[in-house]
Image (cartoon, helix red, strand yellow):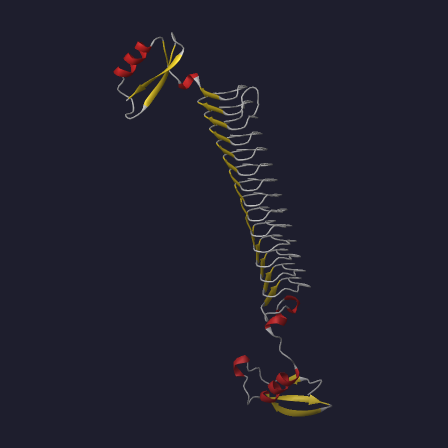
Length: 345
């Protein structure tokens, strides 16, 4: 059947071809009759049909727990239970149980139990138990138990037990047990046991046991055991054992731009304890304790403490008031005695 020349006297169309239809074979000047059944037998016996794995790019395997689809996907990879889909996905991988989807996802991965979705997600990752979703998420990660969601989230991380959600969240993190939620939350953080929620919350933080909620809350904080809630609360704080709640609490962001440096400080209210240098300080109210330098102080903002000429004036005022909350004590300042009074309801 080699070098055959096939022709048909009548065009039957595909529907007209069956095992009994004959055609002519011209060989060495001689004409032969032959059925299509013989032709099909020859094709099946001498021309191998491609398998599905041969149809796929680079003859990638679909057996033994390996599924590779895409140019150079899984090239030179040696891991077990690997699924790689995309150009260079899983290329050079040596880790087991890898699922990589996207251009260069899981490229040169060394970790086990890794899920990488997105361009270069978990590429050059060296640790296990990693979930990286987003372009460059978990890129060059060196910490185990990483969950990264967002562009470059958790990339260049070296800490263990990290959850990073948001663009560049916890990028370059070095701390352990860190949660960074928000764009650039806990970025370049070096402290451990850190919870950061908000844009650049706890960014460049150096302290351990830090809770930061709000825009740039605890930004570049260096103190330990710090909780800050609010816009730039605890911004540039260097004191330890501090609690700040309110807009720029612990940071005078209007004129002096000074941050708190004292330890054991509680600042509640707008700019409270901003620029404070004293330790063991409680500052409550708007601008309470701004630029305070006295330690062992309990400070209440004048704007939060009503003032009366005498005790009698205060009692008359509160007795006549109809908007007081029941079951409470109202504090006030008495001018003639320079003391603090109280009215209970």
